Length: 121
Ligand SMILES: [Zn+2]
Image (cartoon, rainbow, N blue to C red; front, side):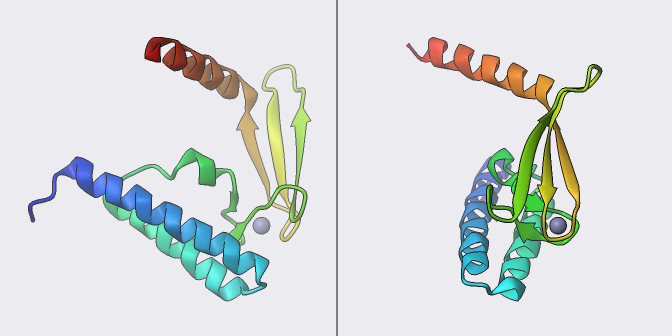
């Protein structure tokens, strides 16, 4: 085992990305069993390698029914301007599960990204 932890994590993230792309493709072809297997597999890889699921995909999976969410197709996105906790609500139209994403964090993230861009220059 000559792999460093970092390398293992990098490989895991690459695999997850490939599998999730395949899952999306399977969904579009209507091969739902295949799609679920890909999602399960990528979640297992994330757990084994102890990496957090890529943000890009995290909000695009319904954990309840293991479906790849495609905006404007099988999920509805709306912003909820709750005074205490404004958030984006993503509703899976397959099972009705709602994923909540706090907006505060989004803002912070955007600021962070801006800072990173500046530092690049
Ligand atoms: Zn669902």
